[in-house]
Amino acid sequence: MKNIFRVIVILSIIFIVTGSCKKYADDYKTFLDNHEVTYPGLATGVGYRPGNLRAVLVWHPSPDPSIKNYVITWNNGKDSLTLDATSHSPADSVKVSIPGLKEYVYSFRIVAHDNSGGTSVGQDLNNVRVYGPVYQSTLLNRGYNIANPYMVRPDGSVDLNFIQPDSGNVSTSIEYNTNTGGLNTATLLPKNNAINLPDFKFGTVVKYQSAYVPASNAADVFTTLEKATFPTIRFIAVCDKSLFRENPLPGDAGIYDSNTTVRKLWDGSVGPQGYPDVFHSDGSHGMPHAITFDMGKVYKKLTSVEETGRSCCNNPDQFEVWGIADITGAETSLSPRDSGWPAEMTAKGWTLLKDIRRTDDGQNAQKFDFDTVPSVRYIRVRIKHVTTNDSNYSNISEFTFWNEKVD
Image 1 (spheres, rainbow, N blue to C red):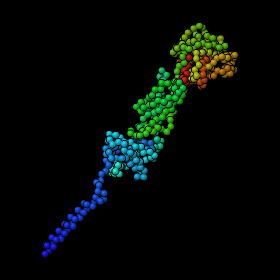
Image 2 (cartoon, one colour):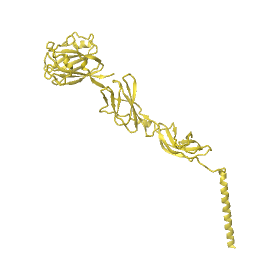
Image 3 (spheres, helix red, strand yellow):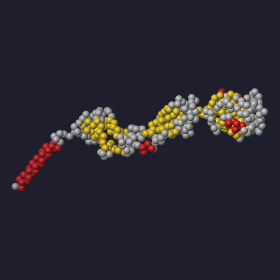
Image 4 (spheres, rainbow, N blue to C red):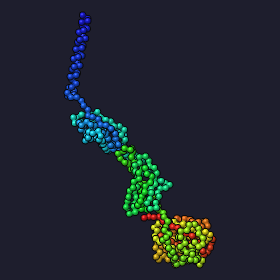
């Protein structure tokens, strides 16, 4: 009887279990409304491009033709953006800009929605970096070559010389004035350390500003907060001696003989010369005495003079260089020996460019920068003393003048 009871119990259990399983298999369909669950296909190649207070998300669309749109969420789902699905070709690229972000690191979730209301399982994009004013404040304009910031070419164009840029530099914009009066912009690439300005107007300011990207695939380019000023570009050239002419004024010293004229001062000789290849004053005007000549054109910015003495004697070691643009009515009535001569020169419109004192024997070439740089065409030199203490004679081999090109 015990065995029969056991068999009945076992059969009862099998019947109950079998009946229960069959009931579950039938009941699950009620939860799915008698439909199978399908999920929209996933996008591929999901990535991003960092931007300026924004992020650009990129991916290849799912080939699932049922996908209607993509919903992107961030800030733990508090913010979202919906993008319509316009392509289902994996060869295409989808790009969507997420604007209005802060300079921070974000996580995004992309969920595809199909026409039936179905949603994909979702794809997460983490550690998305967004840049902004903090990053921009760290950027510096590209450095220029301090030792050799620029070079003026023989054709009058200018090379600006820079050093290697910082990482992330994509360009440096050069803003300058042209010879025709316009404003031009040239672009220096990071692979180059120099840029040529073919039409730069000398005497004007050059501004430059560098641009950077925080990553090679960045969506935006950042510039430095301010433009920088390039060092002043000066084109210092020798004045054209072929234009020089004698132009004696009343009271000027004469010459020793016909071989030692004032023209000797610009004959192109190099180094101290001997008689008769020098200017040699006469002996009847005493000391101080003056000589005057015409440089043949007006120089707007005369900068310096180089004086070379005779190879032996009577070399000026104290002399003044005066200049004026228009000599009309500029003659003086007083002798250069008169103490009132400098005041009369000033009253007549002359400018004292330099009061020069040499402490050597006066022979070798010495260059002197002018204290003032007005427009000058005519030069008057007042020789006050010579190294031999002679009271009458002065000898000079050569004068060379420099000017700064300003137009």
